[in-house]
Image (tube, helix red, strand yellow):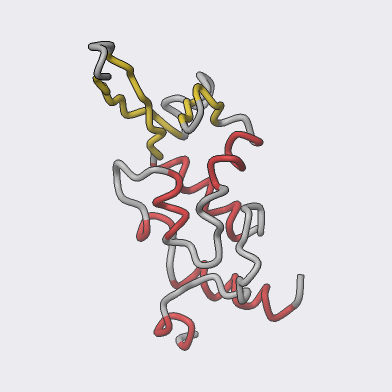
Length: 131
């Protein structure tokens, strides 16, 4: 990593933190959208690689038991089919400790980043200019 990128990371970590970007009830993808340069479409795959999530059905993610209540929880939705069958879908929901871990991974370049990412760790122009 370049010295300039390290300086940007230090400046960003002092100016803005994960709790300022985290809100209760957010999914990992919603949180990743607030972090400049993170590929939010691949965040669930990254969490699955780290054994936080697993695929339950096509397009459906579930939280591993060890991460449940520690980093993530689940929101359950009942979907009624035309046949009368009710299907339960689960959505992973980020907890504050999980957001802090994802934020640390972000600052350490441990998340999947967009190819067009410019190396800046914030989207806020006012924070980038302040130091």
